Structures are given as structure tokens and as C-alpha cells.
Length: 274
Length: 319
Image (cartoon, rainbow over all chains, first blue to last red; front, side):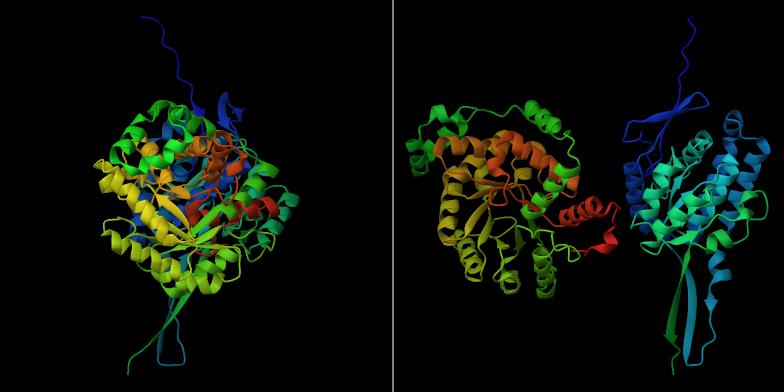
């Protein structure tokens, strides 16, 4: 029998639940694999897909979102060996699965912790409930490749936001593999969109885009770029998560900050009857 | 295509006098090469239009939009808002051109006319028992007269598809002639409803029939059936108006309607117009888009070109 020819994989973008190549046709080499080099237009398409997914995802019950995120953790666990083969340490994969499960549990609990009844001086029920901000652009941390990515995606989507993630340019393989996990986990298309390539190319487009509601700068190491992105984001008053020194330790207790930063509070006054 | 060689100019005006002559002529039109038409349309759709050419195309497309609302839920307030948008599509940018026309149901015409009075935006109204066209002729004509009397200067009529598909071409022809007469000075657009005509050959025949009967425009669809305007169908219609002008010297406009939702699609149509019939038709007087959501996408793309940042639907009106 002749020796079989290996099938080489091209790592593509993840937009609207599909894996298209960059519309620019460009790619770059990472660990001997071709990875798509996303352009401004890919970023624009990703935002369109993310916007289209907001209604269904934010409208799903918290319980349902939690179940889907648990499912993601299950699938992630099943792909453990694949991540290890890409160079992600085994204990990092385990930590990423645990992190994902931890966030999944918050789906139907955060509104209870973060919202509630307010005491008011009048015959009203006054209730505050957190609601998702909408479309969130995320610049993923350079490392750790998988745990860092999971730690920025999960807190954004668990509350009902949809995200466009600019993956770490040096570690896109783990990111695209995570996208494959998401694509097979009942997560509706467009809730997570992933762009691989240069941060300097995609992030400014996302920061300036008027249909993006918030931007998380976790992975922006260059302070000048961070300032520039913040200035662009100011155009339509996006919520901005600045990179903080604490971001350098992704293994510690993540806290609620990343979830609550991407929420809007809706307060309802309801007359109490006579 | 060589329709010109088969019939001399003088013969064409006589065709409407007999069913047999009409049928002989329409069935004598050469058949459409389906694969060829679809391939040609797909090929023209791959042209890349960028920067300044794109800016020009977007402004032209905005001027060609027939801003349409044909819902049972239309209210006077809603159509007035739509008419205001037609006059000034992007309130933030005074250099943005106005659209070609507003297209509404006859009952809404007076409300739109109030807003558009004195402007260069045309007022189109659908008539003749839109969208099915299944009503007695005198009802259809009364519908048309009422719309014109209320202030519409363009009438979008539907052809009688039942009669056309049954082969009663004379009946379809006479209805168009009668509607044209009822229109008076108003322009008549003839809706072929290509989604119900089944074949490209039928589209070509219906196009010729509508032009022979005196239509000023031929329009693809009502937007009320699943299959609306497509590139190949529009290609066949563009070829028909080109050949009709060559045969008779009269120029007829084309209006694809329904299903054209974004700038990219609109530009594909403009490329096809330029390549099929040439620059003479690249004008709001001769080519229109029947659309509602298309305008917002054109405006967003226009904003992107002028400001450099991608805009979002939050910044434009919903209708």
C-alpha cells in the first residue's frame, strides 16, 4: 500500500459560525501552518455577524446560555490532546476548562448578585436588572494562548453579549481550535467571531466601528496603541476595558469585574397597587 | 439577438391588433440561453469597484432608489416620515443626494404628495390591484385614475400573469394599453413579476409585450413573492430594452425590485447596466431600484467612505 499523503490544515477565521478565509486572500505562517491574515473588511463582516446574533443570544434565557457554555466546556475537555499537541501545556487546558465551567455557572446567578430590588421612598417596586451591552470587541492576551483567550471570551458572552475577538498574532492555532470547539457546541453562529492576524490592523477598525458597544483591550501591550484605541472608541462612547497589571496573571481568581464591566443596568419602577 | 432583422419598425405598432400577430412575434423572439445568461450575470458580479468609483456608484444608486413601503400596516405618519427621508436621506450630510422616488399604495399618495410638493423626488404609486392583479379591468383602471388624481406621477402596474401564462397575450396587451391611457401624463412602470413567469423566455416575451403596449419602464417584481429581482432576470430585461430601442428608437427604463439589500448588490446591477445597455441607462430616469432596506446600507457605506469609520444601523432610521 502506498504511503498516504497527510492532509494539512489551513487555520481560517471564524465569522458567523462559519470558517471563511480572509476576504483579502492573505495568510501568514505560524508553527508551519497557514493562518488567515484578517483585513479591515473581515473585521467589518465579523461585526455584522456579531450584531445579527445579539437578539437571539441576549434574548435566550440565562439558564439556556449556561447550558450552552457547559456544553462548550465538555467539548473543550474532549479536545484536550489536540491543544496539547499544539503546544498548550496540559494543566493550562485543564485550567481553561475549569474557568469556562466557572463562568458558565454565573449565567443565571449574576443577575441575582448584581441586580435586585432597590428601596425607594414611594409606593413603587423598584428593580434593577443587568442587561448585556451588545457587541464587544476583544483584543485577546498574547499569552497564555488558551487560558487567556477563554478568560476574555467567557465573561463577555455569559451575560448575553456577542464578541469579535482579535486573537493573539503569535498563538492563533489554539484560538482557531477553540473556535472549532465553539462551532460544535450549540453556540449560535455569530456569538463568538474570531479574527487572526495583526492587532494593529484589526483593532483600530473595531475600536472606531460605530456598531461596536464596548472594547476590551486585555491584549494590548503597547501603551501608545492602547491610548490610540481608547481615543477611537470615544467617538461613540464605547465602554473600554483598559489593560491592567492584574491582567498579567490569568491563573488567579478572575473575580466578577470582567462580567460586570460589560453590562448596562436597567431599572424599572412599578406602582405597588392601592 | 436579432429581433431588428425580423421585424421592421413599422410592423411593431401593428402587432397589438391581433392575437395571432402578437403570439407569432413573441414566440418568434430568440430563446434565452439560460446557462449563458446566468454565467454572464455572475461574471459581471465579480467586478471590483473601489474608492472614487465606489463613491460615484453609491451616489448614483441613492438617486436611483424608489424608496418603497407597501405594507398593510402603513400609516399616514409612517409614509410621511419615509417621504421626509427621501428628500434628505442623510440629515447629517447635506451633500447626500435625494432618492429617485417614493413608492406607496394609492391610499397613501395624498400624504406623501404633501411632503414632496415642490421637490424633484417623484411620487410613485402601485395600482391595478397590486400585487396579484386579479381584479376586473374597470376596478384596475379606477385604481390607477385615483392614484394619478391624488398626485402620483409614476404608476407601477402589475400585468395579468394568469392571462399571460395562459397565452392570452392580447388581453395582457390591452390591459397595459388601457392602463397607460388611464395614467395620462404619469409614467407607467409595468411589473412583470418574473418570479411567477418561470422561464427566461417568458421574461423576454413579457418584456417585449410590455414595451410594445407602451410601458415607460419594465419592473421585475412586486416584492411579494419569494423570488424577486435576480441579476440574470435583469440581464434578460436589459437586453430586451436595448433591442427594443434598436428596433423602434424608443428608450424604456428598467427597475429591479425586491431582494436588493446591500450596496454590493446594487453596484453589481450598475455594472451590469453599463456593460449591457451602456451609459444611456445609468440615470435615475432610466434605471431604478425598488427597495427599502437598501438605502440604509448605501448611506452606511457612504459614511464609511467620507469619514473612514464603519457606521452602524443605530445611526439611521429604521424605515
